[in-house]
Amino acid sequence: MSDSPGRASPLNVPNAISSLRILGLVPLVWTAHAGHRTAFLIILLILLFSDWVDGRLASLLDQRSVLGARLDSVADWLLYAALGLSVWWLEEAVVRERIVWFAKAAWLVAGTGTVIWVMFGQAAAVPWVLAFVTLTNLEAVAIGFVLPQWQADVSSLRHALRLRRG
Image (cartoon, rainbow, N blue to C red):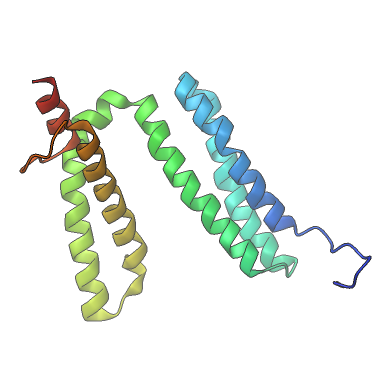
């Protein structure tokens, strides 16, 4: 592999797959919004499988790179965000009904994960802690957007929506 002028570098296959995963989020979200559950599931499975494949190919082809790791992380993060939005569109009633319990569980997981990390040095819990705290804080931001003015002791987005309706 040469980076000399005039010679193109070979295609980095894992980076191409990660890029395609990012582009694949558009049809994933569209199918969820349109309520096409089967198409949504097929696209989701393809995206999840391609995530596994790009990591294996990076090792097998010795095409690991900082750019590749970042692309993979961005694709993962965007997939999780797209899944949250998609689940909302596909199962709004179920999400609304259970969101208060999710927020409470998030703080329990975040607290427990942090204690495990600090006391026992088990950093494996950190990504879960960050994910749950992020989602819980997104709910807090949503509550702020829903309410016409700040109000204390609003336990969930569902509660905020009820307060807004009067």
